[in-house]
Amino acid sequence: MPVISGVVRGAGRRIGVVCARFNEQITSRLLSGAQRALAEAGVPPEGIVTAHVPGAVEIPLAAGALLAQGKVDAIVALGAVIRGETGHYESVCRMVEEGVLRVMLDAGKPVAFGVLTCENEQQAFERSGEGAGNKGAEAALTALEMLSLLEEVRR
Image (cartoon, rainbow, N blue to C red):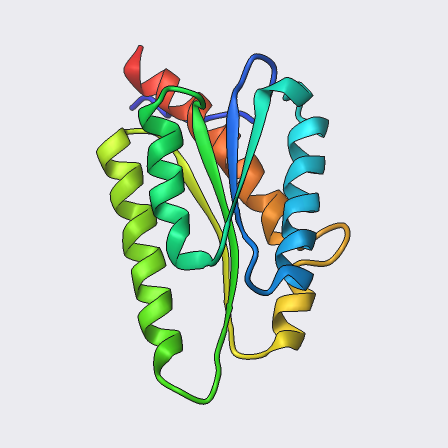
């Protein structure tokens, strides 16, 4: 049986990074991690388009627009949803998760999910720190790997 897998390769890629401003003290760290990972993988600075949206709920719309215009090959979706005292958390998480999935499947292009869904700020800070474990960096590498995998599948 053949085995198909992707590799992380940034050369020649155009990557959209859609980053929510809400919880900016956390999302800015995710963004830095994603940008660093993309650069280290060989994505040129002009190959990275960053779109800032008000909150996580707006990520799918911006991601879909970037993909529809053909401006990028893949999307890295970044945001931070932290549980509060109301049921709003579940609604926001569901809207973002379903929206990102829909955009990815409709476009047939990778939309890597780097949206933190945490119980508290401490968890969010731990997942957005410098170095290993930064979920923005992990999502960026996932987007690149999936581009490569899809190219292999479509050959």
